[in-house]
Image (tube, rainbow, N blue to C red; front, side, top):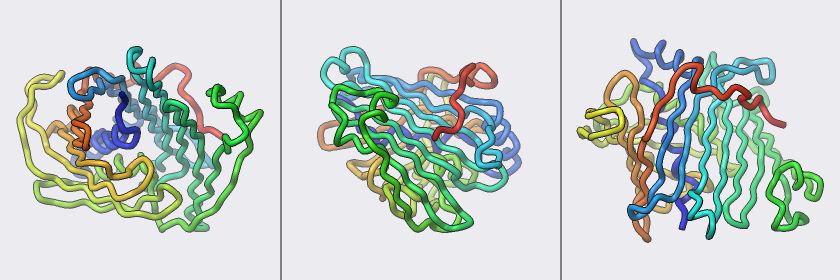
Length: 282
């Protein structure tokens, strides 16, 4: 039993406040750090944990960029049957909202995936590199070991002007003023193609949360891409309707039931950034 690997990262769209008088606070949160912790459940059973992190500003290819990280890990019980240990890293330019690099590292049962995408906006090219695991024994999970046995495959694809990756696009969405009934659009490069993401604001609802009783906005991302955004059911997100816009609850309805991600803790500032936070990868 496990949750779909594509949907929990959608929560990242709810980490920032909208662009307006609050935009400066949003940029400060990105620069200083914010870490959100979630319990993942399926049909009421604890399946694992997920985190979403804004790790501050780093230098990448000579540009200042926000470092965004998501992780997901199955619970000890679930790991006995289907172990999950996923991580994705995104780098979003500080001066203009566009992606610089996206990394994805997935370990889900026997499935292994390691890839990097570099966004060359001047040349309008996405340079994609992934590790071919065909020669790597299934028991090898660590990237360092797999690199010794596998080989890297490099590809290039057309890149839409100003495109975002599948994680930082969601931060970008939170920089756009939202209102009930409004639909937001954004350009995304994911799964080797250019796509358009739609996000609808469905309404408002009051919830009891770990942060207390909160009025929330109810948001539905329309998942059109393959891979991490492959549509397998309806996804609904509740975020606090205040200056913080914290995602407190997510539900994904699929054929075999309902997955939920519930906020359990929020940490901000220096305490939210790991002492040895990862620098841009290969």
